[in-house]
Image (cartoon, rainbow, N blue to C red):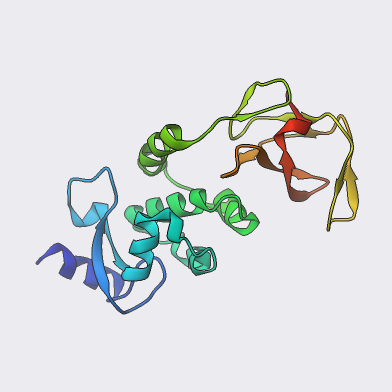
Length: 190
């Protein structure tokens, strides 16, 4: 049985990410040795967006709400990577916060994202020039009016477990129970 036939049987002949049934092909989830266990069956739309981030349609990826719960590690890895790519969107970060991966699967998922991000990402710096990383805690250094949420993020508030965005001048974090985007120039690493 070929890899494509094996994946087609495993996925019931549909894209393992969005459930589309048209234009399906095998996608190797790197690093991979080319086995079915390290590959997924994807539609042309998903494949194009995976391979070319400039063509990302964030609305298409709401399908990850279902596919991230797959029992197949390769599907879990791809869902994790796409959610990481979309983590500046509040819904994607919320899904990432819910996603549980076994240690070996998480290591596989982060293997490609770490190298890709470190090569192309401009570091996010706080008001003092310190480099901020995902998971850091920061302190707000100026009262900030949060538009649309109806409150002010007070100076001295500590924001724990921040998430980086695609914009190196912004981070995401929870203030008063609401996930908001903050400008890094108004933050100090704690």
